[in-house]
Image 1: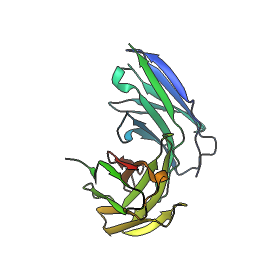
Image 2 (image 1 turned 30 degrees about the horizontal axis):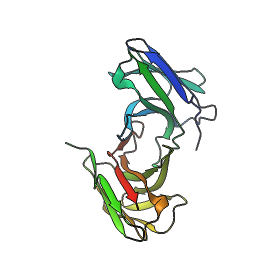
Image 3 (image 1 turned 90 degrees about the vertical axis):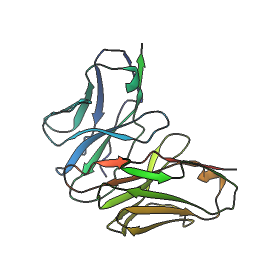
Length: 111
Length: 113
């Protein structure tokens, strides 16, 4: 499986935008870029995913580099409830294979 | 409605016991998974079933035996529990197409004493 690399931790102030980077230089053509987050004492939850184009949903935006070797999850206005571990993983849509979750980025939001 | 539900949520048991964790998904997905998250918070896949067929079996001790009676259920049975089995176990499901998004359960906190 293609692997991803993320910073271990990031900090943000409340109500400011947050840009969480992810590198996936060995991404294959059929891999989708997925982001999940895990709040304390909860299971990971889906945030957003994309293939080539930038994506927006009610939770966040996903900016994908033109060569697809990196992406950025954008939280437009961080709230205290966004404090979590954010995982960037690659998922092949053509099979039910495994995806490797790395250490993720621990986001701290300061009031 | 809970999409992926697993029981029990908390389980404390003694070494050497046998225990099971049950999982059900009502999303109509064709693939289900078990993940283990240890004290270091690393999330690692253990098993994956597609349409009741085992397709992924990571290097997990054979004391762990998954069972999928149907597409909507994937149970995890653990024999002869050891201290190192203490962890949070997450059940998940996904469906091919539309990016193959994974939906996780809330986790089962297993403590072996």
